[in-house]
Structure formats: C-alpha cells, structure tokens
Length: 628
Image (cartoon, rainbow, N blue to C red; front, side):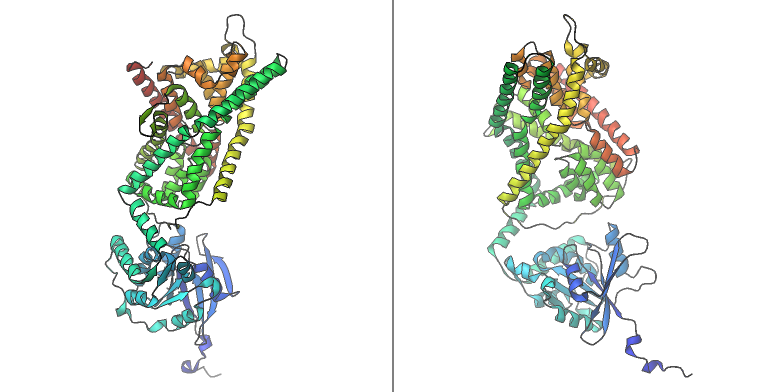
C-alpha cells in the first residue's frame, strides 16, 4: 500500500479554523452565535468548572468551515469571576489540549461603544487575527446614534463590520472578514501594549467620539446628566441629598394618611367594645388583634412612599448610577460596587439581599456582604423608627422644607450605612481579609418610570407588607396576647408583669436594664425575633392589656410611649434597632448561603454585641445630658 502524498492530501482533512466570540456581557454574542451556527451547535462544560461551553460550525465564503466558540461575557483578561477566567484561558490558549483561537471576533454594542472599547483594546493588544462585529447598530440608530464603522476601523487597526444579529444583517460581510483575517497587518493596530486601565478609558472615549456621525439631543442630554450624576464629588452629594428628600417625604407626606388609619383602628376598637360583650372575645379583638396588628398597619403610608421613591430610582435608570457612585466609596472598606446591589436590596429586606450575593464572584467579598447585610435599614424597621420618632421628636421645622422628624429618620438610615461600612472595614482586615475586586457594570438608559409599572410595584410591596401583618405579625401578636393574659393579675398587680410573658421578660429585663430598657421593651424584644416590626405590635398589645379602660385601649401607641418612656430610653431603643439582627429568617438564610452555622453565629454575636454597646452608650450619654 502506497503512502498518501502530503502535498496532495485533501483540504477537508485539515483541522477547521477555530473562531472565538469575545466581548462584554450584553453585547449580543449569543444572538450572533445562534445566527451564525443555526442548529449546528453542541453544549458541554469546560474542564474543571461549571461554566457552559457552546460551540458550533459556521460556513465561510471560501468553502471551508470554522468552529465557532461563544465565550462568556468578560470585562477584562485579568479575571475576577469563573466566567472571566474561562474567557481568558481560552483566548490565551491555557486549556490543556486546546490551542488559542485562530481568529477572535470582538463583539461590541454599538449603543454602548465607549464602555466596550476598554476591553476591546486588551484583545487587540494580543496581536491575533481579530474582526470587530459592531452589533445592535439598529438599536443605536433607534436611540439617535449614527456611527462610522470605517473611522472606528482606522482607530483600532482591525476590520469593523456592522451587524444586527437578531435580523441576520451583516452576517455575510462578517464571515468574509473572518475568512480573510489570517493575513492581517498587525502594524496598523491601536498601540495599547503599555496602556493601563485609565489610559484605555481615555483612548476608548476618544475613539468612540471619533466614530460618531450624528447624535440625537436626547443622547447628548443623557451624556450631560451622567457627567453630573457620576461626578466623583457632585455624584455622592446628589445621591445623599436625594436620600435626604426621601426621608423628609416619608414623614411629611405620610402623616395625614397615617393619622387617618390610626383613627380607623380607634373607631374599630370603639365599635368592638360597643357591640361585643365584655370578656375573652372582646379582649382578643381589641387587645390582641386591633391594638397589636393595627399599630403596624398604620405605617403602610410610610412604606408605600419609601418604595415609590426606590422604584422610581430603579425604573429611571438612576439606581445603577448610585451603584457606580457607591463603588468608589465602598473601595475604601475593601468592597466593590458588586456588593452595593445586594446591600441595596437589603433596604427592602435582608433576605433577598443575602440571596443576591450569589452574583459576587469573590468568596470573601460575598461573605463580608452577607455579614453586613442586616445592618441595612430594611422596611421592617420603618414602623419601629416611625412610632418612636413620632412620639418623641417634635414635628418642627429646622430649615426651609426640612422637618426634624425626617432629619432624625435620615440620620438613622445613615447610621446603618456607616455601621455597615465600618463593620466591612474591620471584617476585610481580619476574618475576611483579602484584596478588593474590581467592578464594571452597564449603565441603562434614562427614562421616565412607566406609571403602570410603578403602580404595580407599589401594590406588590404594599401587599407583601399587609400579608406579613396578616400572617407573621398576627400570629405572634395573638400568641403574645395569650401569654400576657394568663394567669390573671391579683389586686394591685400589673397584668403584663404577672403573666407568663411578663415573667419571661423579667428575666431578660435584668440584662437590658443597664442600657435603659424597661419591662415593656424587654417583653417586645423576644417576639421581635420573628420580624422587626412585631416589636411595635408587641408594645401596643402590652399597653392594651394593661389599659385601665376602653378609652385607654383605643389610644394610639405613640402617646402611651411618650408618657411612659424617657427620651434617653427612646433613643437607646432606636440605637438597638439600628444594629441588632432582629429576624430569625435572616439568620436562617445566612446559614443556607454559608453552608453552616459558623458565620450566622458570628453575625449574631457581633451585631447583638454592637447593639447592646451602642444602645448603652446612647442611653448613658443622653442621661448625662439631662434627657433621662
């Protein structure tokens, strides 16, 4: 048998060219991959990692085929996540048994060109055959942006092909550029070998500006807004000013509605007393249900107003800018803007906030974020803050449009944020020590919040709050009322002290009395472990049980507290709730996300310790100033 002449071996025997699709997340790589390969795809995992590997065959104009690989979205070759590590390893040819790609197709979002050009310069610096797919040009044109691909090609030194993957536009031109890529002149390329990140950003801005043929007024306006809202100094000031306005509105706008709800609760108590015979059933309805659950429901207007602002910030596109601004501040405590989104979610509830840390690739960053998430002032704390502030802080103005009550509420939220940042600083230098990771994110377009979406979001938040009031708070309050009602107090005894619950609270009172907490507060701390707002229901139920007559039962909680507590005690109570991890559900989720009880116990230990210390410091300082 004669051997085949290598010179006459068929072309089909040669290994197909390997082409890799590379780019930032949301550049449209997957859509382009699907358009080029159709059904000729296979999916597997990369060796050693649970990152999906998608490859397929694409036909080239010269009659050959190429293997096309869709790589995970990446912002840099210096990987900060498993996805980015896979992309870097494939591009650099680090996977065993796999050579580096023959050609790289760099996919850029035409509507976000400047951001995508930062990573593009890193890829072009590798001096591999490269073709740029300027994708989603139709979306850019719809938004008022017209680009010159030839000018961009001159700036980069590589071919640039406009594409619309979802409409299969530009695919023939792209495959032709891939087929011709082997003989590219590397001397024409943009000189990026010695450019750092800052220099690449400057170069990206210049290249993107040079490629613009025309731009609508709206896009220019958005760019001007970003220059102000993302300014290193003006941006944080605007953010904190906006938060200040929000907390002023929570009190100023909600007061008439909250007063009306309080009136309804009082009217229902009076109606029950007038129509239901005195005894167990009447006490259950007036003391256990209406006084307890009703004392929490009256804060629904504050919850709705707070979430109206948060949803408007999200839907307008500003919330992503807030994350970018906070990235600069959080870098000082060893975290990045990746942690800001979970922490922001924790303003609604720490549970989804802790679950959202799954998006943080660095394990120490993620653990730190989990441990500080309960310090964010969740919506469950708002009823506690609101009832204490309304009872002890006068509704006076301290400046034009600035109320003292809103100022105190703003201070409590800031105290939680500052506490979280200081805790992160200590944790990142001790138990979660490590270098801070980088952070890059896409900026959504500005838009007016759609009214329908805003109203739907408010309804969902209001329903969640009311459902908690009708389930968790109702159940805990009823159980507490039963424990407060038996055994019956003797002559001259206080029912809340003689009852089963009162005896339990008396044991806890010994521990919390030094920091200014009374018997009623000690009683409220235990059921508040179910949910923070239960503390308000517990206090209302306790005072209702001890009320001398029906008129006292119908009295709102605030005036009762103002008559019974000192200002020093009230301030200490607020300081406690700023820091204490008062929610068993949060602890349970932290255990699940950290795969054990070690870190939840650390969380509970340091937060309860801080709460006790700072509540005590607040009380002792207030007493020393004559506020006790």
